Length: 549
Image 1 (cartoon, rainbow, N blue to C red):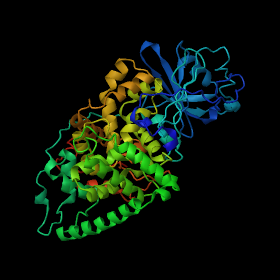
Image 2: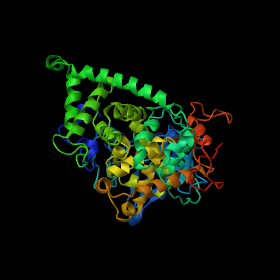
Image 3: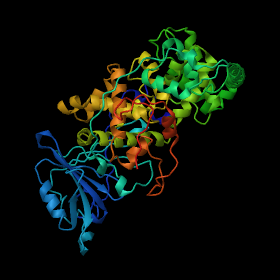
Image 4: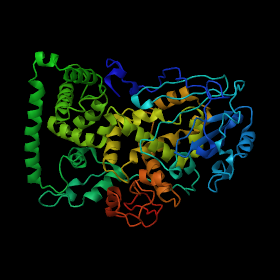
């Protein structure tokens, strides 16, 4: 998002996700026989059609093109789905999927009727009072909007964002992969925190078994008394194979480098700053954010607290370190726990650079990384729970835009400060896969399924409900759920290729086929080196990664 999208004097739009701006949908030229709000698709471009049904007789269809793009759902409040399918079968063959009885794959007949399209089938004439078209414009720029009525009945026509993963083949389209049998979800329990750090150091101070340390941190986190040391390794400030003497040298060099950068911005005169609007804008945003970041925490409370000065100075220095990115709202949320744990200006800065190496793309103006993560989350959730996805689709929430804040700052606003310390150190291990934060999101959403569907929430109430989960979630339960989801998915033999890629089980390839002897991903290698804790494939994560063809 950019500075022009919000008033920097208030909470950024992603911080309160229950606000919806209503805008009129851009009108497209009417299609012959369809009226103003119809759309046309040659049946030769139709790849699949999926039927869904909810309580109160709400039926809808989702069509996917051969390019992998889902079209707005078609709702039928007065019946007619069978008649539609029957009419379409005059021109194409609809074969039910062997994996999902609600999914139909489209094949051409050997006739010239393929030139027929929806307008020629007279599906959307002016008298059809069953259509309301609703879509959400780009939620990734931290805004919501784009609701438009066509009639008083049709709701929930959601336009999904284009895939940031590049061109997708029909076999990897979003909707057709929802019928794989996942099998039972194993029960998972958390372990004890890492509390014997010194036992992992050799006489010269090297970490003897980094993979075991990461696995123990993933299983149970770190004892608060030892976080200050272990975090510096997890975030790359110190190499795992460095000696105590080498770390002393690193600290000395990094301290000098930090203060050289700090002097750069502190030496900017008022006259210079007046001629540099970008620098002036960064300083203004930082000053505003520092005054409202974790002020409930004693380290940052009060008006003359030195912790606030450190927070300000580290963020300003980061602007000099990475001036192209500079400062974007949300980065103060990432720094405050680092500063709280290290209690050191220099160490917190270099830990922040390591953290930003993992998430800096979240803050880039293009928002491509956020779009990709939301698409990947959608892929995972549909593989896990098609029913929940169908319900969210029917309520205009299939884009999962309400998860934007979760992914942007790694759930910082959803859990307590102490819980965030535990969660982030688990995520920094990058176990059992680099996208474990997406499995966390799936675990949260599944924990709310009964409430969302049972209470028949609509779009706005879904946003409100998700926003009100703040500080009400049990971290250990969500972590167990996320790990259990990982095990359940990786044990599935029919997992789609795209889901395998998200889980790090398969190296993404630009070609349609991949050699079975291709090199494993870095994540696969990391997991393969970890120490096994049990022989059964349904045991809690043990460092071994299930293999997929």
